[in-house]
Image (cartoon, rainbow, N blue to C red; front, side, top):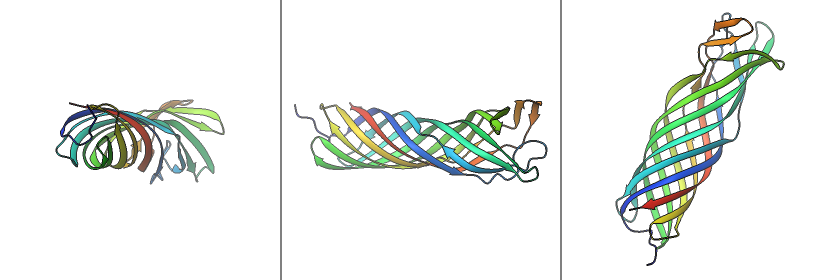
Length: 217
């Protein structure tokens, strides 16, 4: 029997991705001893992601689905302290666990191929972990982990090809706004455990390319 991309029904899938990220910061009073740290030079490493999705295709063109995404990558930034004329560096891991409600519209160039546009919104739990502070390469402190809840919005495009009547392989591209990240309010280091004004990374955007495997019922 020939595979067809046009039949309505339930579907589930597995997604993987790699991508890039960028963000900004409004923090101008971070750090200990009264703060004063200005966040600069934010850098994200390559992100990797894995996720799952499940939904229903209502007709030849329209689908709705829920998705879960786990995305992780390195992060690095500087904190400049004008009052001390010095700068410290921070590095750690930025992780997002997101749940989205999505809609999709399909174009069908053939019975076995689908071109899909998607849009989704939801919530993401953004965690900064393993953050270490250094001054000129010398260890200063480990900063407390923290998870921040933020809204997420995402658009995407994909092409799927059905290799069997029930199973499709896909190539996907997405762009998402994932809100912000924030450190904890304490650090542990050369001076013991002390309180700090948290550092925040705002307005994080991600762009990703990935592959997917989808099965329908």
